[in-house]
Every structure is written in structure tokens, then in C-alpha cells.
Image 1: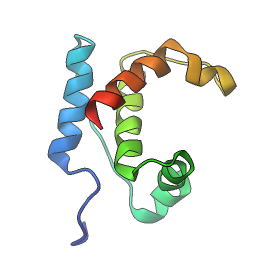
Image 2 (image 1 turned 90 degrees about the vertical axis):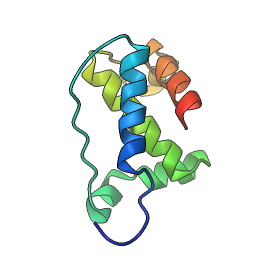
Image 3 (image 1 turned 135 degrees about the horizontal axis):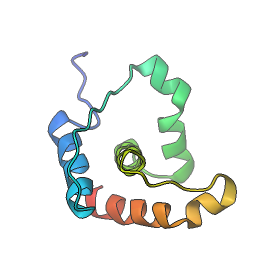
Image 4 (image 1 turned 30 degrees about the vertical axis):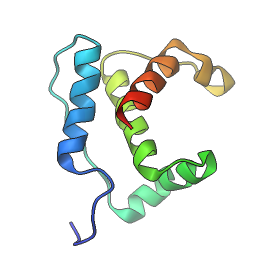
Length: 99
């Protein structure tokens, strides 16, 4: 890890995942791995944040919530219906609370 401040400190990552697990009344062991700058650039999280006009931190929280919900068995359709799905609405409620 470089000397630069991280967008989401490890304690914040734990709190986000724990909040989703508690909200879903589920217990699980989760492992979260953040990629380096080059790998992350390929995944375009910062570009997505700019496109949406939101901070990178909020987009990272969205990705954490999204991944946690998938790990708990939630799914969504692909395409335009994705953002209207029950999983997406649930995800956005968590993001609104946690971001």
C-alpha cells in the first residue's frame, strides 16, 4: 500500500459489509479484496463514479453492498431492468444510508 490515503479505510469496509449483513439478518464471513490502480482502472469504478456525478467513495460503497448482496444470494436481471430490480432497490437503500 502506498502512502496515499485510501478512499475507504479497512474499518469503513468492515462497517459497510457488517451493516448489510445485519440489515439482511444474516451471518457470514466475507473477504474483500481491493485491486491496485491498474487493475481497478480496467474495472472502471472511478469512470463510473464520474459518469454518475458521484464521489468514488460512494461508488466503492455501492460495489461493496452489491457484492455482499450477491454473496447472500440476491441477483438481478441484466440490461435496463437491472436498475429497476428488487436487488437494486435494496442496494440503493443501503448506499443511501452508508455513503
